[in-house]
Length: 276
Image (cartoon, rainbow, N blue to C red; front, side):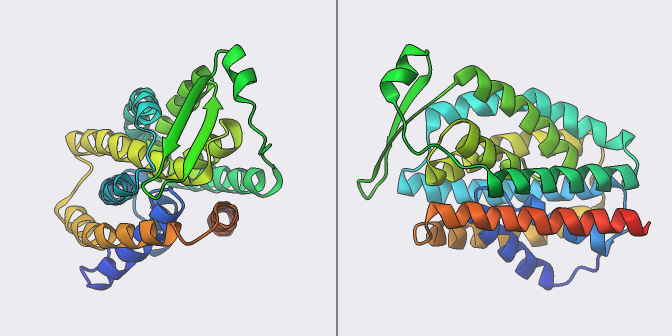
């Protein structure tokens, strides 16, 4: 595995800042880096390291977003509960996927999510009266600075999506936010800043469950545990920086940045598969 160098802390800081800014946990950055630097490492070790780092990031980011009062706790707890069965199944599945197929699945998921974010446009007009007639959940979140967000969503759809997100996140080691944020914004009509904050809260719970499963199954060696610790120190501070930046960047640009990051990661990983 990688040498135990201080630059792992710097990498963790960057992963934490970007991951918290877009509510994605940072695993979508860390997994490709580990895949590129450790071409012979098995998927289980890579996903276990990434998921543990995602937990550190999500915990720190959630604390920052909680101070901003951006987290929809009611929705977050419900969706987190739905992700847990999927997270356990995903963590147990990594043993059975060969590295080449793992890379291929990861790359395709990233590119599809990027295309959806880039070309799909939300309807910004939210008719809460119509949503109430349809039996949708109505939510209002007021930030610390007084900004109010009123929105609605289909709870059944949200719970179903969360199960899938839990599985894919633990399977790929990406934390799930890279999938959950687009789902919350595009399919469930969450405001972008509430989606990123709530996603981080969900990630903290989901990544903890997935990490516990990986630890119980013996995925962590002494080396990988030390790397996780160094990366974890970096993301704890990076997450605070990402939360600070989120208040200064428009939601539209956060989504576009997320789409570009996803696309580049997916293309690079698929190129590795083609090259053999």
